[in-house]
Image (cartoon, rainbow, N blue to C red; front, side, top):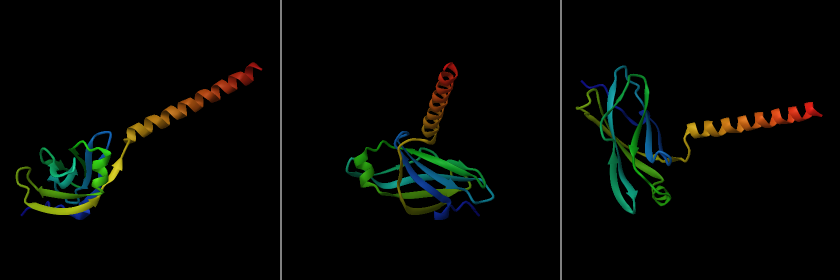
Length: 144
């Protein structure tokens, strides 16, 4: 009996990252065993036409771990406006080539414009600039 029946409660977030030009779906495996999943986004409006996109291969989600699964698709702002939510289909199972469970869900689409790494770089640059300004001010005061 296959125990990898992923469901609505396993989906933690559905985002579109503009920088990566990809959907990022965060899934938590609550089972005591490793599970495999294959994802599709159904009826996605791209260039005013409905289309279905999905992962290229099944993805392993380790026991009690969370995986972020990527589905590449370039969307422009107009496409994003036409897709405030997405229809996600998840196929899952214990074996990569035997995904016996399926569930569908509709999820609000969150849009990410910058990745966490970019935010960290920007904050680091700001901190460095502040430190440089403080050092310059201290040196000027010492010179006077």
